[in-house]
Image (tube, rainbow, N blue to C red; front, side, top):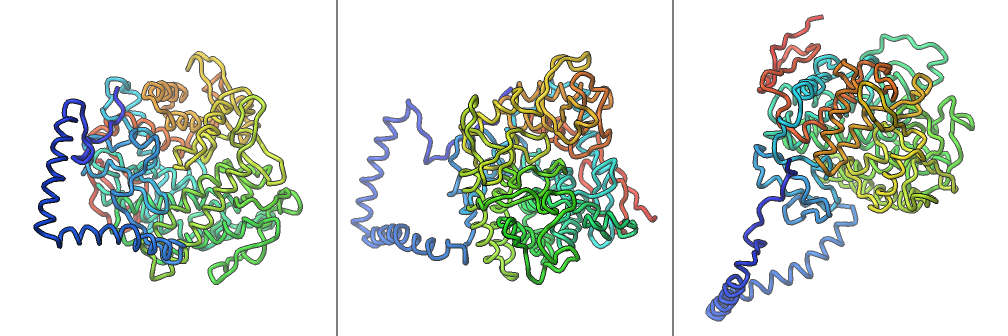
Length: 590
């Protein structure tokens, strides 16, 4: 197996041992020729001098003047390439459109790198290394969300529920459609190849923006307002569309990532320019800013914060101190009440969620600068850049701790008062997922954290042997310990593969994941390390999507040409033409 190789050097960077001497000679001749031309044409030399003056004097002034964030223009150009150590590892899979041009990762002055360095994408198909069962399972998990949880609504909206729970989680739904946005899929992102899939995702963006505008603190929503909540549920912030009112920082980050990847795939799509989308991102950012000072009872205000639950500081029944949570001190990071597992935080600053926020804020700044000037995009970009810098500084100052065995490593949660929680949780964002999310982590701290995660020092780590998978190890979540004490979550195994540098390790993990389904061929929420037949949630599409993404990173044989998708319910009278993977779709009238 080969990993994706760097593109051939351009003519300005090619250098070989056999040609170096002649190359130096040619260069000398070119310099002499250039001097003769300059003597014959002094205007040429003057022009060159002015170019240097502009580059050294005028451009820095412009950058200093406008780079403060008041009117920062994003410069998307191949001259701004990422120079990180990982930049040569990831390139678009062969067969992709404009592979030679697109393989250079573009970096902007907001420090966004697209696509992120992970997962590492292999250069060649590996059909011989993956079994037919694995490839079939990849196609089924890739299309599982569309076939079973997607409802395309009129008015250009889409509702995507999580699986065996018929509510839409902002996080889960964005994660479920993420494989459709992968830029390294053969031929480019699926949404760019298939108008029907583009309609599905654009509708989800619009519906999610509506939910965020409805209440920026809520994390899960119902498709309509027909459900009747009891008084206890109403006290927990639940009403009309709101299924759960857990403030989870990563929810908004997932929305922004989905929006950004969609824009990269379809730059001219109208949805990314809509005011409702801008307002949703603005609400997310203003909420993050307010929650930097959660301890001081600061809460977001303004015309957009007119929701029923937006009349004071966030308080959730069940959290300590009357719903406020445990004490915190200002760190630059932003507070969250709940983890991506939906469990409440022990300490208020969830480090992996803050890592994700730094990345999402960079995406938001680029979107705002490029698309939303008429709505005040430059001001929003300025806030996003400033906030990202503050959060990142907080992570580096407070989120890295010293462990007596593993040395410098990332904590899972901190409070700024000296307390820290050392563990990792399988739900993403996790500490393990930092490279996958695109966060620019401290390498030494991350390496040590990873050693900690896959050791008995991590309270969620499990290892054992069973007749189905043989020897297996991974980690789970405290979320399911009441059902399965020694639980491994498949998504943690998938993330181990998605952050791996070797194809061999990724294939081993894929094979283990396929076996761990215990014959069901679906990812589960969790399973017992000693008996994978004992599992939770047989219908959990977020984990399915991560498995499909992992397989897609090592093979272009998924999906096969005969493995078509259909959408469970298409209730919009307009049905766009589908691409090569589209099956026969009926329009639901009920």
